[in-house]
Amino acid sequence: MHLLIKYLSIGLLAAALPMISIAVEIGQTEIEVRRQYGKASSSISVGAKKVLVYPAGRVILINGKVSEIEGDLDAKAPEVEAPKKSESKKAVSKKAPSKFISKFQNDLVDAKGASVQVPDLADKNYILVYYSASWCPPCRKFTPKLVSFYKKYQKKGNFELIFMSSDRSAKDSKSYMQDYKMPWPAVRYDRMSSSGLQGKGGRGIPSLVLFDTKGKIVSSSYNGRNYLGPNKVLDDLKKKF
Image 1: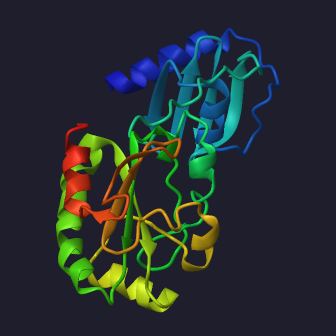
Image 2: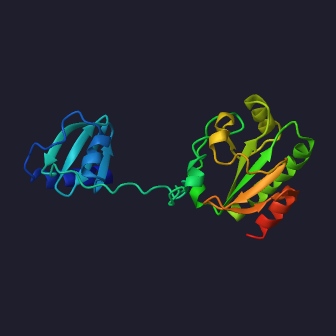
Image 3: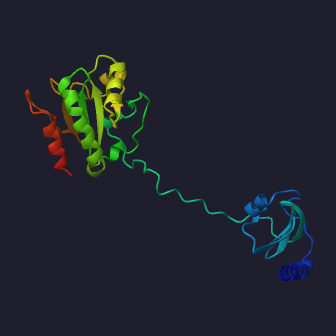
């Protein structure tokens, strides 16, 4: 009973407003009305009938569609603030990639051989390149340790690891990545020669080379012809954290 009295009271107030044709048309949905005029001051529902009350008039809907328009609601739709971008989205790199990074950043693949993009590659502190192959026993022994190191320190050290395969085929390289669950990207097998990374790993594998984002070597498994091993590079990288 209280709701009915409130409805009749609003009806009497709105009756004094002139009947004016506005942009909203008969038959439009409630969603379309709200998109144009924004949230109503109040709304009243009685059975299949619903009334959206605005300061300058009201819109009457039957079964969710406009049946009557009363008052001058001003056909100009209110400005709607654009939704804010989600803070959870991964930030896109603010730095332009160096010539060093540009040579390989568009030729990276995952363990399934699918192309991947690392949009913040230019914002990393370092690029760690892993020269390795499935046919190499010392490589197979070292790779699980490298996987653990990457998972533990990659975010803390703000570095990315890139795999440069010395396998005999793209198929062998992909199988190696899958078998050892390598979480980092690799330079596509047929693009390694143009990556700018080939030949920088030294005379043997496994080998790690730590670069800054401009391509300067910070640490290497080799000192000239002297093989120091990949663990030396991991130790040097940890000192940078």
